[in-house]
Length: 179
Length: 192
Image 1 (cartoon, each protein chain N blue to C red):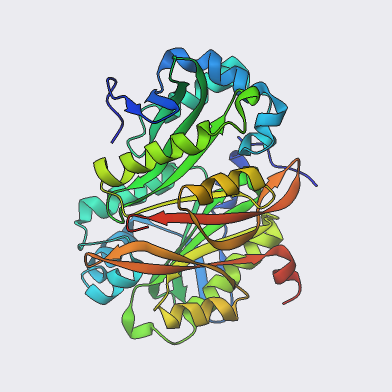
Image 2: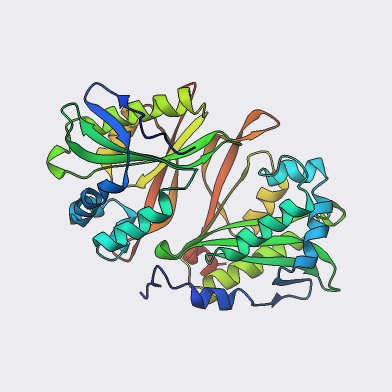
């Protein structure tokens, strides 16, 4: 279910295009920002050198259960990424991940718009019934954005991940096709 | 706190050969000769319904592919469950996320004649002792059908706590079905 190269998904503020090999440096720069890493599992990983980023992408790029997009502004500037992982055709669900890598573009509605676009793709093109996500319990900005997009809190997962070595609760949220 | 290296899989591969026993059950590494038994048991509609991820009875070849994929995954530990006499009952697997010191667990007593006798609860207890005692994990989690009352009771006996209700998490016989998310933390296990 990897996305075809020529697919373009358009929102009101952003354009989504498939992630390609040439995006490596972009991702490496985004993931090198401690404020971006803070909210991601990368907080527990070694510094994302270009080589580590390459290895990770090498594993991910041909994974048929992933659909990985770069978020661009309408004038074509890449600002972050959004992806569906664990696309499960049997249970018709997937997990959503998103990061606005350009910190200067946080709080401008780009993420919310990108999520709406990907949800439309997940429900209308992939015919999924459920899209879920997990996020740090103290990620208020993220949670507010997810709620705007129709995600509903379903539970608190205690000590779900580590952040800088300390156990951290995460919230699980989901949006159903009929929502 | 000692963090395992993200690629610290060699130790886990060795550990996965561990044999765990109580008076009632024995967990040992899954062997190829177990596969034919699993494959035969998976003809049972009700068993497959509770497992949730197997729609049709797999062929022997498909069952073998499943085994190979698990063996090749350095973050999966897979045991067969036997009774004290060495009779095969089912299997249990831990899928590790070393970076976050947690694992997901999946367990099945495949021989339905042995359901309700406490084998699953006892086997799960062994796996949890291993996960928290040996692997030093923080959290073991699972998701199960909301209407699988027998399994939920067993997990609660082992110390699992409900954390949420996952709406339409699975499709069963073409219909959406809710799942319960459950987990046990190291602190729950220590207080047991």
